[in-house]
Image 1 (cartoon, rainbow, N blue to C red):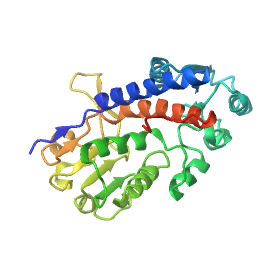
Image 2: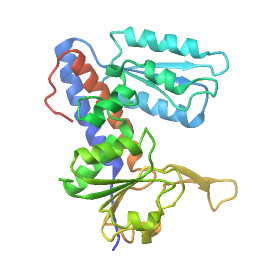
Image 3: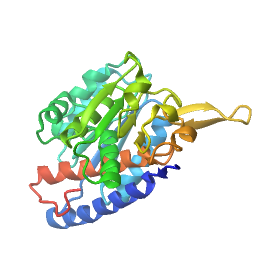
Image 4: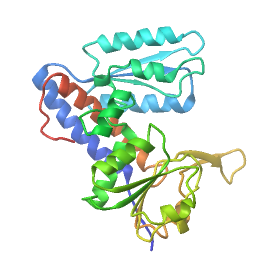
Length: 297
């Protein structure tokens, strides 16, 4: 068996096109475009790339992009909190994203919980986590939501499927489990202390790997025909001296010989994360203006 490659780039392009159509309707009806504010503190290269890509996607969808780049050495936590307060009060801003990681002198939890939950398009605020856990409308973290959309496109109805989520972070693992549970999967959350992890994973129809360890999940861990969603992004040495390459949390070579479908790294989950971010921004704008979306996205 050779797994079908789940094309996250194509799925993200479709979602972004659908969002752009709804943004045009929203703008024509309300006289304003949805706005996303992104805050970057410091010069972390990976974060800078993410922020740039988010800005491009936002503008391509017809939205306003407000980018705030702050110096890590001269910006205090009080300065950042004050900026968040201003963005919360700005009627042109529908979504606020503070790019992680933050410098070590800043308390990320304090910053994230300062964001208005109704503008928390990253879905990290405890209020939105509670809404997700209790089935109330709110914002879901973009990466898990992107994973869910890929699974729905691949499998259709997820009801009754057995799913294992490897990883228990607040950003991916826990919300991913909640989303799968809401789609009537039987869900197991596995982690570093799970006994006989390969045996647990081998029972799953759906495997979502979000543990942050390069190529940890091997092909012989998988149930034949399983769907594998690889959230990991890890840099490992390349064959050329001094170079690195990106790999996921799943050993793609062996897993693709057992799974029926698998996301690649890169080109799988990553593009969906940004597409879901602009989707969440549109949803926020529509809620604030009582605007009905034709496409629920």
